Image: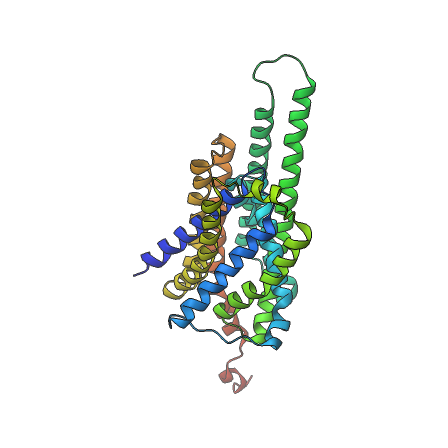
Amino acid sequence: MKVPPILCYCVASILMTVVNKFVVSGDKFSMNFLLLCIQSFVCVSCVVIVKRLGVISFRAFDWQDAKAWFPISFLLVSVIYTGSKSLQHLNIPVYTIFKNLTIILIAYGEVIWFGGKVTALTFVSFVLMVISSIIAAWADVSSVLSGSLPAVSTGVSLNALQSIAGAVRGLNVGYFWMLANCLTSAAYVLSMRKRIKSTGFSDWDSMFYNNLLSIPVLAVFSIVLEDWGTENLNRNFPPETKNFLLFAIAFSGAAAVGISYTTAWCIRTTSSTTYSMVGALNKLPVAASGMLFFGDPVTVGSVSAVGMGFFAGLVYAVAKNNQKKTEPRMQADAIIPLANLNRKP
């Protein structure tokens, strides 16, 4: 059955995005490093428990492997942190669409460092991704600015100017973190691909070391950079919602395990192409979840951006499928048949 793994992957992905958005969406939330540290701890605990139950297996902890993998884990911390900061300032549809730009960076990184190739159809999908991002940014800026303007035109007041300046400042911060997230995500994927070849890590090995090594880094950053005073803790975790927030953080850590498992399950039972198609299709419900649960604006621009991003993902999946089919044929054509060597002119 190919439907269950696809559905499980979609549900895990949507849950992860929605829960993270819920946790960091508060204006007063500022303890992102603590959030990520708890998530990593829960993730490692879940993986170890599942291993002891005999469901999965991965190599035992080794200091040499840890030293080799630590830079990758540090990059992962950067990816998750910049992602949480961008989610804090941007709505889910915009965040989802701009994540497509990471695909472009990874593709050209593979061309430079791994001898990859970008076909004409792949390039077309990249153009569509850029267009969808421009539409999303335009719709987002228009929505924020229109919400900052007074309902009745009473001239340009100081409060109106301050409101617009604050909205623009928030957008600039959000898009800065989004750019940083795209760059660090591409660096993480490309570096991990290179490191996996040298260490021979499996998916579960990578996940175990990534989360385990990130815990001390996140803990140190949280203690050094974040305010652990009673007032700030109460502001980030209000007494009336503290237990629910902690449960949501723990749940998101467990959801990360679910995403890793369902990703492997989906690829194993279907194919990498089907997985790419599911990733493209999944952008619609992820974006819709933001509009449904967090009141993200439903405008012509936002819907058009999501639709364009969805179509770009489909074109990219088809392009990768065609490229996968032609590569063996090209390799076969490059081989000179032995029979030709025996022919006389």
